[in-house]
Image (cartoon, rainbow, N blue to C red; front, side, top):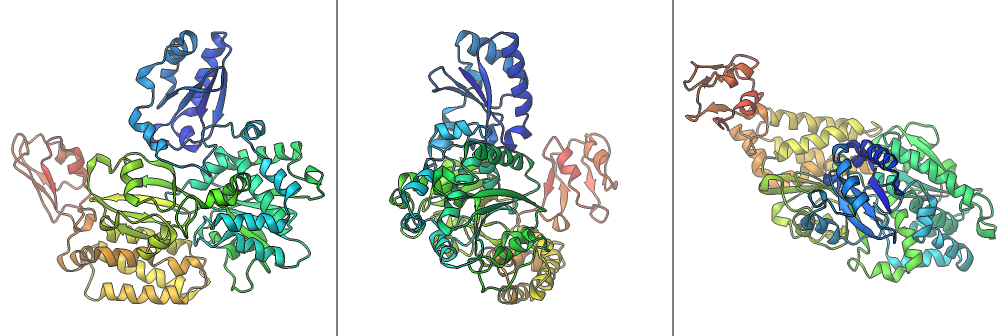
Length: 583
C-alpha cells in the first residue's frame, strides 16, 4: 500500500508539503508498512491537496481531496489501519467527470507517477520510444512518422513539427542544436510548467528523439527562472537519465550521442519568439532578428537549430510508441491530436485540461469546467494570452482547433483559456493585456514600442471616463500599423485583444466614451454608489469609508456625497444588507 500526495506547484501552494509530512509522521508513529510518495498535478487544481491511496496490487483505491494536515489522522486511523474509506473526504462523482471527459496524451502520466523517479517513468513505458527510434528507424523515418501524425507546434502558431525538423536535418552545419522553449509567459498559463513538474522525462525523451531526427548532439531547455520546482525536477531527471545511459555518449550502443542542459531565463515574454530566445541563449539581450534566415538554417551560434515548446516534445514519445496514425486519428482533419489548456478565470473548476482538437468551447467551459462561478452569465473567453483575443458568448460553440479559433480573431496559442463573466469589463480587459505587452516589448520596433504605448494611453482614458469621439477608430488605425510594422509575433499580435473586443463588444466602448458608463459596473472612475432604502443605519459603511463621504444618523438611512466619494467600493464590501447600489 502507498500514499501519493500531489506536489505540483498548485498542491504545494495549498499545503501539500505539510500534508505529506503529517502522513510520514503518523505512518511512522504507527509502524505501518505504507510508503509515502509524491506526484505532479493531476489537473484538478481546485481540489488540491489531492491524496491518492493505492492498494498492494498497485490499483487506485481512493482519491481524497482538499486534504489539509488536520484531516490526515482520520485517514491514517480509518483507512490505512482499518481499511475503511473516509467518505467525507473522497472526490465526488461530479468532480471525477473533470478528468473522465478528457483524452490524455501529453498528460498521460500527470498525477500518476513520481516525477523525481526515473524508474517510475520507465515502468509506464518510458524511454522505449527513443530506443525504438535509434535501433529501428533512421532520422528520415522518424520525421516521416511525425509527418503522418500531423503534430503541429503547440507553442503558438501551430507550424507543422515535421517541416521544421526536416529543414534542420537538411541544413548543414558544424553542429546542430535542439532547443526547448519552456519560457511560458502568458498570464494564466501553466501547461508547460505542469508537464515539467509532473513528467519531466517525457520532455527529455522527446527532445532526444528530435535531436536524433535532425542530427543534433546538444539540447538546451530554456526555462523560466520563476519555475524553481520545475527546474529542480528537470535537474534530477537529467542526472538520472545520464546515470541510466539515456543521455550522453553512444546511446543504446548505436553511436548516437546527445545531452541536454538547462538555461534559466529571466522571464521576458518576448523570448517566446524563437530568434529572441536564441539571442538570450547566446548571452545577448532577448530581441528578435529578421527572418530569413530561419533558425533551421542559422540559429544558435549561427548553426542549424530547431525550437519547439514543452507540450510539442511531450507528444513525441507517445507518437513514436503508438504510431503517427494513432495520433492523427484524434482531433480534426487539419488539427490533429489533443491540446492542453490552462482553464482559469471565472470558472467553477479550474485546472489542467487536455481535450481532442475540435471539441466545442461549450464542452470545455460547461462540460469540464462546470460553468461560471456563482452561476453568473458567461461573457467571453480569452484565448492565446496577450497575443490572442476574446471570443464572445455568441461563439461558444466554436470548435477548439487552429483554423476555427483563428477565424474568431483569437489564436490557440500555447493554451491559456481565461473565462470571463458578466462582471468583466471588456475595455478594461483589453487595457490589461495591452499594458502587459507594452511592458514586455523589447523596444526594437518603433511601431511596437511607441504604438502600444499610445494605444494603452487611449484605453486608460476611456476606462477613466475621459474617452472622446474618434478613439475607437484611432485604436483600429494604430492596431493595423502596429501589426504591419512589427518584426516579431509580439508586436504583430499585441493589438489582438483590442481588435477582438472592439469587434464583439463595441457597445461597451461606446458606453464608456459617450455615456460615461461601464456596462459591467467594473471601471471605478465610472461608477456611482448610492444607498437604497434597505439601509438600516448600522453606520458600518460610514466607518469604513476612507474619505468620510457617507453621512447619516444611527438607525436612519445614510447618504453618499458623490463629490467626495472616490469610488473605492469599501462601502459596498462592508454592507451586510445589500443596501449599496453600484451603477
